[in-house]
Amino acid sequence: MAFTNPHLACVADTIHEALGAVYIGVYLRIVDGQFKQRSADNARTIWWKLVHLVCGLDLEETDAR
Image 1 (cartoon, one colour):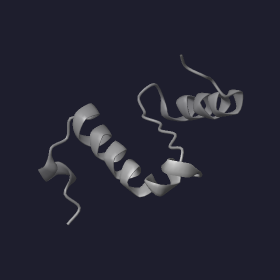
Image 2 (cartoon, rainbow, N blue to C red):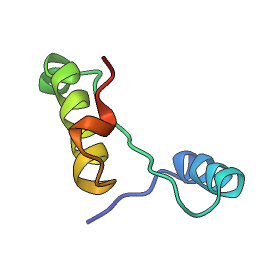
Image 3 (cartoon, rainbow, N blue to C red):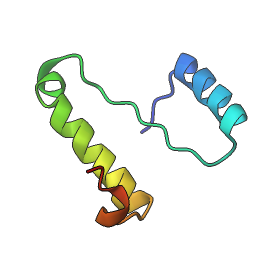
């Protein structure tokens, strides 16, 4: 089941109009409970999965050193 927040949907539509059809948006819940405690780890994990698994970039392409 997916829930849609009308305010976030409006923002997403605006971004879609500005950037076109290809973009990735992520909403991370980080303000309470276990989400707050693990927010940094969760953000890193999700970023890594997006960059490497979804976008298909390898470690050499994404090494920021």
